Length: 449
Ligand code: UDX
Image 1 (cartoon, rainbow, N blue to C red):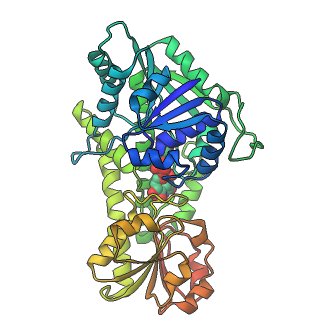
Image 2: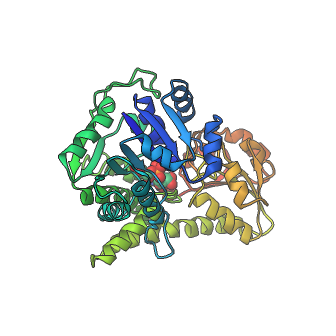
């Protein structure tokens, strides 16, 4: 099929590239001309596992192209994915101006009927407004626009794998014909008719994805309800960690046992510095705002948000308690990205830690496998090192802020010889407290003795 993707941010690029890899012909456009020029020249504006190779192969096969001309992109396909940003306003409400702008563009540039699919995360009822805007701005009353909602459940770092091996594909539609078209788009995925770039064609056996057809309002709600629940789960684990510290229990033992109950599940019970990134904090806020706007009390989500913000305070309390005086200390911050396997630092707990340390007069020496460039743009005064051992040299303490595998595997015997003081404050519970103590470290983490 011919497919247009509007918005070449994270979601748009992954969606466009994966749809092309699955056999469709995709044209991508973006309001940011520089980004399009970079993509046209074979460049890659974001870091995401497998994405670069998929873009290269689909470009070579002539199945993906980029244009700054939105009108041309809109006229090229009957099916359009909207993947523009929906950032939070001060109030927490999602800013939908980019969706509105694209709706007007589609309405005025289209010369034939279109199926317009919301991929961006939007509050419930956006589909209704989108359809209204499409109808209101078209100059050709005979043109029909159908709207669908197709929320993404792509995790940064494993987005390509998530796209090709989803648990569920949710499509919110108003007409059966739209559901049938959406099924056609995802047929290669549903029938495993694609060359898997993640497993190189040898995918491990797994459950087939469920293709769920819902109303548009339900589909929109599913996305916010899912992300907010996961955020809630993390905050729950973090409160358990606080309790463990007071009572003298081990949070890893407690959450491990909890997770073995299939009704609870093992994932997203990792205590530590809390959640960040561009999705969870903003989705949580937007969901709370939406609930309040329709008179529904969603205080449990507000509590989850509050708990998450307090993680940074609790981490810094540990730092202060261990160091006594923070001002003037040389501190090695390990990890800047909001989680492992991404260069994304948006709403990263690590960056908030760095900011507070700088405010308190510490000398920050940081390392991250992918996120240094992005962090440098915000904190040019920090010393950055590709090699974590260089960041640790002469440090008064190591502060672990992101759960990168390379940090998990650090040789602490070697690091201990480089550091001025053998002190580790671990915001991601990466190491065994017993082992660290055996190596002669003063070691603090969350919810463990
Ligand atoms: C999320 C959703 O998982 C995805 O389905 C959605 O479509 C986009 O938003 P992402 O933002 O990439 O994906 O991050 P995710 O892997 O969900 O992690 C979010 C944050 O929670 C990270 O900061 C991570 O470090 C933190 N986290 C995760 C914990 O603190 N504890 C956990 O147990 C799990």
